[in-house]
Amino acid sequence: MAEFAPGSGEPSAIDAVLKRHFGFPSFRPHQREIVESLLAGRDVVALLPTGGGKSLCYQLPAVLGNGLTVVVSPLIALMKDQVDSLDELGVPATFLNSSLTPDESRRRWKGLARGEYRILYLAPERLVTPEMLEALQGWNVGLIAVDEAHCISEWGHDFRREYRELAILRDRFPRVPIIALTATATARVRDDIIAMLRMREPQVHVASFNRPNLSYRIIPRTSPLKQVLAIVSEHRGESGIVYCMTRNRTEELADALTREGVAALAYHAGLDSQERAKRQELFIRDEVQVIVATIAFGMGIHKPDVRFVVHHDLPKNIESYYQETGRAGRDGLPSECVLLYSPADAVRLHRLIDEGTDEQEKLVSRRHIARLTEFCESPQCRRVQLLGYFGETYTDPAGEPLDACGSCDNCLTPRETFDGTLEAQKLLSCILRIEQKAGFNVGLHHVVDVLLGADTEKVRKWGHESLSTYGIGKDRSRNEWIHFARELMRRGLIHQKADQFNVLEVTPAGRDLLRERARIELSRPMATARLSREKREQQRKMTGSIHYDEGVFDRLRAWRKATAAERGVPAYVIFHDSTLQAIAHEKPATLAALGRIAGLGERKLIEYGERILAEIRAADGTT
Ligand code: ADP
Ligand code: MG
Ligand code: ZN
Image (cartoon, rainbow, N blue to C red; front, side, top):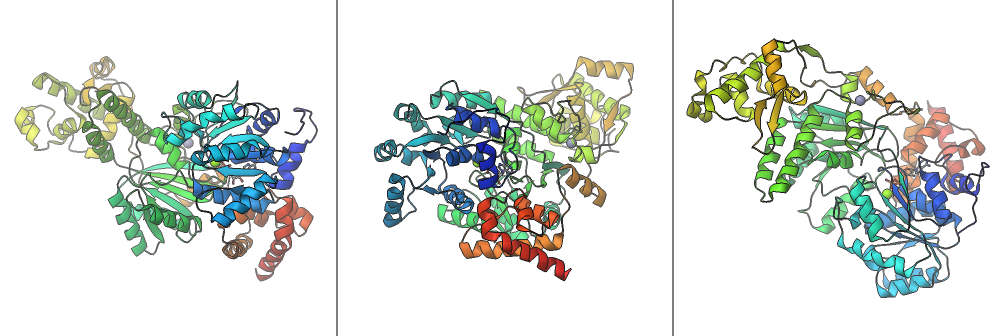
């Protein structure tokens, strides 16, 4: 690896490479430190969120060092994408996998033996074959990068047995630094990675898991098709993913969207692998705007310009929600995450859990759902809550804690509060009355049935129509009562016993409230209305949107689409939207000015510079 003096203060070799090869004016958080550690020969664990820029962490040292960088990546489809992107940057890179013809494969082996490549992508199962390991010994390997390193851990969300075999690397390449990269934040996974790869005193870099360009919104699911269509229509010509709980629903929704004129396809594990690969490719190439998927979709998708992620149904837990929404906006541009919330989803998930046999597992799953419903129903800032879940405090750049992000639904349209004393009294006393009469506690839905004066089998069986609280809540809807009850749970006035079929119990604090007739403010259920124009504007501003000339942007996009099609690569391999927007904002008139824009390295400037300037002139001439 190249000699390098960290912290010298001068614009260093790494800054030059960053600008010249990658076209970026500055590093993202932790990238510089990670690159410096690697160049100093240290092992590194990099925990950066999706879109945090993990690839650059090994690609830059690969350009700067003088050996071969071997990148372990789980997905063959992804390798081609990465190699195409590196090609465009003028970095010699290649991959070996079963998709190559024998001729092509031989050609690449020869090139590798001659040291013509800086980067080699391999799947783990291929890397550990004796043949490959032996060849690598002769190819002057300078760095080993294990991407998606959480796959090595059973505690991760995507364990892959082949990753375990990577333990052999330390034996075979004792002096080569190893970098493990992942977006999974848990300490358990991190410890597993370090142990399995036998890393030596690795430097661990953990970035903030805040995704400032994502906005979070949770709305009650009332008419899902209409709601999804409304979101799609706000993203004309932009890609999105809609997650559903079941395969059937993905098919139904994709069909319904298609009938409404949206180019949409379903994606789930029930399709054969060829069909799945095809659909994924159509999405990546922007031939299909919306993918309606079960969670089987996502791991392999590194499409940087996914502008919206919709959860049609409740995800499994907060970690899944974070990972799935995280697939939006990898390129850093404002992107939207909308969850269509219905308390009924939680009930269904509970039923699924009840079918299980492992008691411990069931308890954990129930807690996960409880945390998630709490998150959905809470009036607190979504971002603050999400980061809090990962043990992180949301702060301003100076490190001061913040309690609002300004772009989520709860920040944009703060939940109204009202004097809920009466509602709280009705709920609490209803629970107590039932307990007195029946001698045991019951679940939320039965309590609400009694409040609403419903005629159900349980009401009749237990004689609950004779309770003084029977029917005293008819002025409110079922959803409202559920919402109020959940709020009282969050405030510790009602306790839900997760280990006893979720029955409700009034806590001592709840009894005090009732006895003292204390006043209490409750929040209204979340708003169903669409965001107003001003709110949308604010949402975009808070997630970093810039103003640019839309005429120029549209022209550049059209040009990019044609160029990408000619070369047989996805559009984002040529340029990211963020780069095109920056160009449409600056509208540079000279090559030198164009070269100062982020995302335009030397190679791309030479290749496309003149053409881009011509497009800008043409767009200006016509507007
Ligand atoms: P990850 O693997 O962490 O999800 P990627 O490596 O795919 O993220 O990078 C996400 C996007 O960020 C890519 O489009 C990449 O070009 C861009 N990127 C990486 N580093 C920088 C940087 N220093 N400045 C601007 N954009 C960057
Ligand atoms: Mg990555
Ligand atoms: Zn917020």
